[in-house]
Image (cartoon, rainbow, N blue to C red; front, side, top):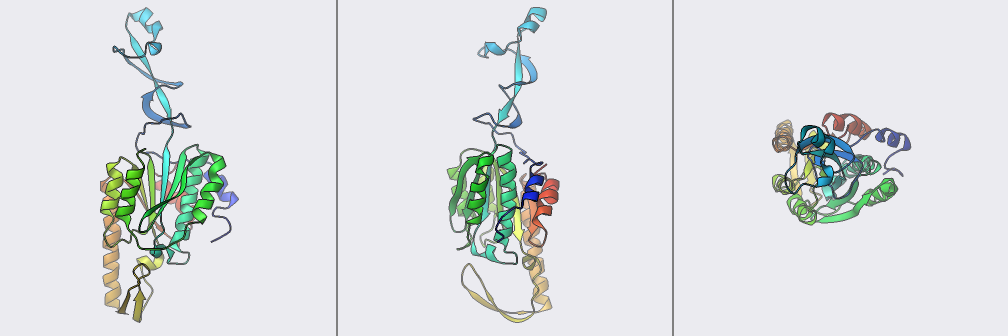
Length: 293
């Protein structure tokens, strides 16, 4: 891990970006983001007919004087958006060079920095067998170093329990917002149930499938004793061409299944392999995927 998650020149590039919320959220406090929700603010949006019970302060009396018609002025509401970063810290994320966890930390740091400098609210959660809060909800540029410290402190340990962890998250966080899940999604029980819990709570879900090149196409051969870092189990295999082709078919089914599931349920999906410079992932891939602009 480098002494700094993000270098100053890259931070300058992030200053020009903002996260994209594809859903409309109701804000409790007035922030920096404009939403399409009609409410009370300073930017005029439209008129509608007055109905009993509406606030009389927002009737356009000039129009009433000319047309003898009661019209209510509507405005664009300023809105806070909550950004929840959920990072997989199970043992499998320590694999690779660079390790998948280090890559995920840098991507999470980039997204968190964009959000904090845009005056959004940001939190960091880590999960393996259970969910842990690494950074409570923070806001503003002054919280950037707390974000970086929280991410740098994450360590990999334990087995993956995606469904249990995301269920815990959905229960603990009633406030809707953008949820970014950074994980290899290597859970024997699958990913569907965990992501479903987020969808049921109306979160705007972004999946960043973080993998090493060896996960995608192992460069191995001969007779091997493979070690499962999460369960501690050993398996002896002969890495023949036939076995590697079978592995590739299984990987392709996994990758296309996860991407297809996200697409069908309106979630943003990005494949992030650690051989791709993470700055290009943020500045190019996440832009194309509609997560940032």
